[in-house]
Length: 129
Image (tube, rainbow, N blue to C red):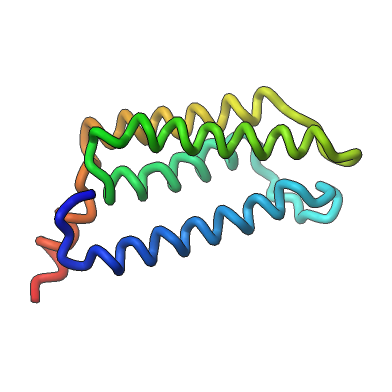
């Protein structure tokens, strides 16, 4: 992890983001007819959710952990798909898993190229105390 001045704030916000992941998990496992229609591709939604989550954590953790983060989020995604396949009202979808993986992969690449340590950069620029 980076030497962040507000490390606990970033971690708490990350945990809150994980809480959002919990909500996403719940929404992923309830019958889809219970959910509102977003009128956008669900694959785009999958991509954007995993891109956002992964980008958050590439800002908090050092680059040497990016691959582990990617694998962790991909395994989480796989777990959700497996659980969906075990229900009678949802199904395992390889394309959902691919969209999630694409979001994760893009976030890791963006992290390496331009967003690594974004939390530190944000602190030094905007949170001068």
